[in-house]
Length: 302
Ligand SMILES: C[S@@+](CC[C@H](N)C(=O)[O-])C[C@H]1O[C@@H](n2cnc3c(N)ncnc32)[C@H](O)[C@@H]1O
Image 1 (cartoon, helix red, strand yellow):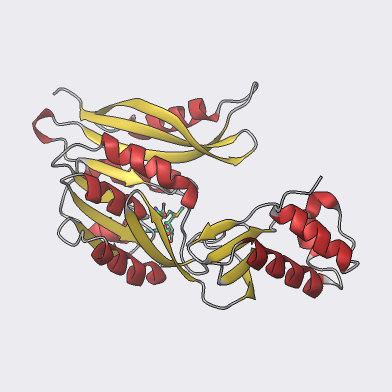
Image 2 (cartoon, helix red, strand yellow; image 1 turned 90 degrees about the horizontal axis):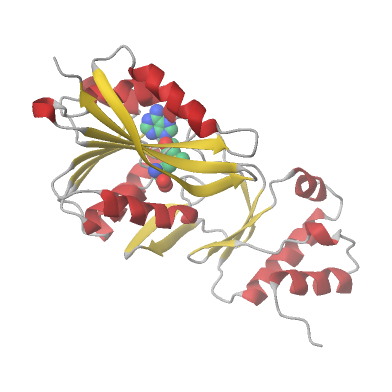
C-alpha cells in the first residue's frame, strides 16, 4: 500500500535516501504555520542533541526541503531551538529557509501582522479570545495588560462596543500593535501604550470595569497592583480575567492553591471577591494546563 504523504513519511524517505540515520521518534511530524512562515518545534532535549551532531546542516536542509514539498505556500522555515524565554516571551528560532520572519495570521475575522522572532503570538489562543470576547458586555471600559501585538483587544473590540487600553512593554510590539489596530479598523476603540504595566499604572488616573491579564507566567507578580484600578463606585463589580498555568492530576490541584493565593492578596483590602468561569484553555505540558479565572471584585459594605 502507498504511504500517506505526511511530513513524517516524506522526511523518513528523504533521510533514508540520503543515508542520514535518525531515530524514528525524532523525525518531526508537525509544524505550526503563521501565514507563510512555518515553525518546526525542536526545542526538546533530544532534538537539541540531534541539532548539535556533525550532520546537523544536512538534517536541517532535509527538513526544509520536505516542508516546502508538503506546503507550496511556505516561504520561510524556522526551527524553534529554545522554549519561549525572557521578559518578552519570544523564542530562540533559527531560520533554515527564506529570511522574512514577519507574518500575517488570521483568526476570528481579524488579521494580525507580527514578527514571530521578535514578538509573542500564539495561534492556540484563538478559541480563548473568542470565548472571552463573548463574555464582555457592551459599554465596558477594559484594560489589557501584557497586550503583545493586541490579539485579545482586537478580537474583543471587533465584536463588542467597548473602550480598551492596551499596555505592552516590548518595543517591537508597538509597531505591530498600531498597525494591527489600524488594519482591523479599531482605532476608535483601542488605545495602545508601549510601557511596563507597573510604570503605566503609576501614572494612570482612569478606572476600569475589567482588567485582562493574559500573561500566565508573570500575572502573580502584578495582580496586587490591579485591584486599585477597578471601578467599584456605586456598588459596581469589577472583573479581572486572570490566566495561570496549573498542574492538575490525581494528586495535585494547583487551581486550589492559586485561588488561595488570590484570596490572600485581597485579605487586607476592603474588598470581597469570588471566582467564576474557571476553565482550562490549553495545555502547556502533560497535566499542566492554562487556566482562566474570572475574579469578581466588589467593595465590602461600609
Ligand atoms: C504571554 S505574552 C502574551 C501576549 C498577548 N497577550 C497574546 O496573547 O498574544 C506576555 C506579554 O507580556 C509582555 N510583558 C512582559 N512584561 C511586561 C510588563 N512588565 N509590562 C507590560 N508588558 C509586559 C511581553 O512582552 C509579552 O508580549
